[in-house]
Image (cartoon, rainbow, N blue to C red):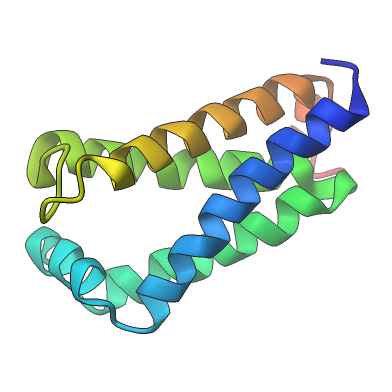
Length: 129
């Protein structure tokens, strides 16, 4: 994936989805509170995951830290997907599976970013950003 325009589109897809869900997490939207109550981690899990997603979004947009942000987003989305599969179900409060699909799209975007930035992994392991 050498095309910088495609890379920025993938970044923006991940960031827009991550930032869009922050509104619901930080404003105690009913569906968000329900999800984290069901998981048994309300309110700290809701607010904590929102902060992590905000940090991941910022890191993804900074070229030097894209890999770190994508890895953070990847981990967060894996947690969301596993929560849907094993606890919440694909459909939450009759959303038609929208949250699950958004998590999958974000996971795929973060995977593509990690792949695109794979040459920086050795530097990340040596703490050289």
